[in-house]
Image (cartoon, rainbow, N blue to C red; front, side, top):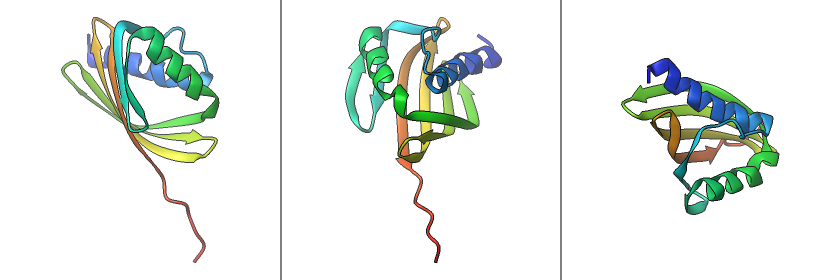
Length: 115
């Protein structure tokens, strides 16, 4: 896959989160997901089930940067949720055009105060 093709797969995932429709994202059957607030997840049904649970909280995503190396695309983005804005770094491994691994790191942006 070219760099552009890899980025397009990752962006289809992120756009799917915002549109609340991840049905067109090419998740591998044996995909894994790791994040700071959930135990490691494995398998398409389990990972998609988890993502569907969080979709209602996602309002928007603003991509800041894609870093592509080998089978990996690391993407930095701001994710606006119903609880505020999280800064996110997702390391996504692609294999044969499918999302094979998602490792998500994120933290809430500090609240802005006047004073």
